Length: 320
Image (cartoon, rainbow, N blue to C red; front, side):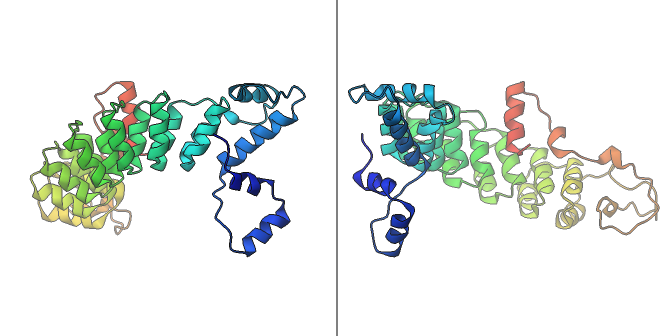
């Protein structure tokens, strides 16, 4: 598929001509980096001393890439998919540009169902990065297509949807049998995605004391209150989360609602067993409380009883 006549004409304009076009009412030309890359590829091929107008189109990429290593045409399909330019994806393939799982993932990131379906229908590989990208960016159309066509998915995909507050994606995944686990509630709480937390809990997603801890660590009192008031366990980890976020509203709620704190109280000072000395804003007092005994690097104190790949994915949930 050749570039449109409109884009070809636009690409041929000099700066003065482009400035003039900008001053009058003309059709919008959606020129993106993928378009200019393709025109550059054609230009380099034409300027090549071995140019043969009767060569096969699909040899152009290999011929130009061999003599123009300064230009990275390898990612042209990926860039075109990210821009949602299905015509550029098609033309790039006609010229022999490679594609791979990054192309389908880019299409899902952009929410370009045209690019995703074209790539998949024409043999472009995909993997779990496609479904994950759709969930992360809330591209329900692409997520639905990928799931319905048996695209691989990772075990934290529901958590990814919840993390970014894409309730429609979370609902779709759950309703179509995609398993979830306690990480869905944990990350929803940590990111303050209350509606996702509610949906997950009300539909049987497991939660535990780490959900309350995550709510406090994120500084989201509404999530902490919802979890506690709906039967989620809490313990001293909640105060660890509070120290991490320095959130006074979470501290007040935990104190006034009897959150266990036996080993969390200041051992010295005025003798009132105070807890607010955890906060940086607390008044100074003689305190022998061992900060290192309670200091929480929240992300690394979670029980990671998974393999190395799972740990990497879990750390990604927390943007580590």
